[in-house]
Image (cartoon, rainbow, N blue to C red):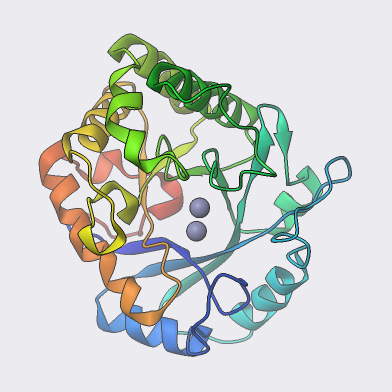
Length: 268
Ligand SMILES: [Zn+2]
Ligand SMILES: [Zn+2]
């Protein structure tokens, strides 16, 4: 199976994207050259009537997304272009997106593990692995149950606690992971394969590749469907989707395992 889509691309509208070249023109050109058929923009957003944004989210209130959607729909880019967003949560049941904004987007990626935002996202009570594991489970199940996201972005990857990734995941039993994934499967919430699942010495990310593979295999067994997302904040990072072939082979993914949102009409 070839990878034909990338549904997690940031543009220069995201404040964490420092690449001025990360424009719709350049991105569509680069992804077409890579042979992709469908792309999706997912800049960060915080829209909520109930929970105030953090400093990071302050200026990401959705206007840029709507502007980008207008531009995306204004012409034929030679590749299918969706405009969505990367929404977030500060605690189980507390989301930074509304039904109203969701309806205006082609799709929503929901992050359930942005624990690096220490002053914004609820932190695990202490620093032992099982506590972090339970914390991740709680966030994941709430996100999957909520239906606020069509796809869960980089699930079970503990940003802010990456050095504990192996041990925190090991503290979660297969049965716990399966039951959590079954919630996502029942809601048809997609599971994103993201470059964070690849150990990366340059980013100081050392962990066993078996850790994400185990989670993804259990998700597949539970009936979850998958999407691919480079999480690119610059043109070069779009190339990351090529590395996902590792997971396709390791998990034996086939077209039937791909989530509707990532499907291409003539995929085989
Ligand atoms: Zn994210
Ligand atoms: Zn992202």
